[in-house]
Length: 371
Image (cartoon, rainbow, N blue to C red; front, side, top):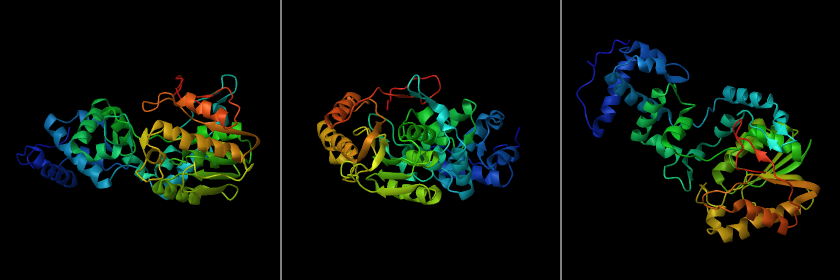
């Protein structure tokens, strides 16, 4: 048990008193009034351990929740470590991953792989936390984090169910305990498996909608010769450029273009593989730049014709004979017929549509998305 007796805190109540309450908690922490908690809070990663939480009285818990909120807000949203040593270790873990083992030729499944590379990719994309997902009643992860009431509820539930408070796992707990949804990132290990299966060694590939770096890292892991990427978001392109500068080897040339895939036309017959997970119409509000497909084409019909069809036509133009176009697609709330629409358009622009493969995002579960 801690030695806390409540003597350092004045009588406070109401939301306007929360900053003062938090200051008192931090003062007690710094002065060693709560030695057990001080040890926990000063741990490199764990801000609060559930075992420590269980030892506290109800009043102690209230003070410490306020202190945790201040600590988390002082540190900012946990986008991922920008420490070079941490990033290097994460990259090496990705390079050790066995992506070929995730390929199941018999069942045409890419099995759930490790999350290797995901934290690394996110660390280059801090703006992603502010993106809202359409059809979801909650705020973006950043908005949830910045709201003291929401964060307070998440911290309490996290500890109640036996999880430690860590900066690195906070985005996951925001999603679990708020029912919210942030944008997704393609698993680099799965991306590497797809590049290997459909592109082959030393392939020249085009990622039509780059997103947040998962497929770029997968391309590096699988050893493609050329990674061409297009994305209209300024902040995303900046993150991708830095990620490529930091980790793309001399054997992989990275060519990035800040524009939409409906505009970019690769040289004819220059590509072995076109592979992406496109924006699902207006499901995710990546940004409000006029070049974003959901802004540029605000209706389903306009988006299907102006973005999806033109993108697939550009793929058909750029692919070598025998090349593949692989699209990760699923029906979503804002476009229930997206899969069939994609298949129909692919045929219209000249593709032969093959039997789909499934992506297993969790072990033992068959997902709705197909490639």
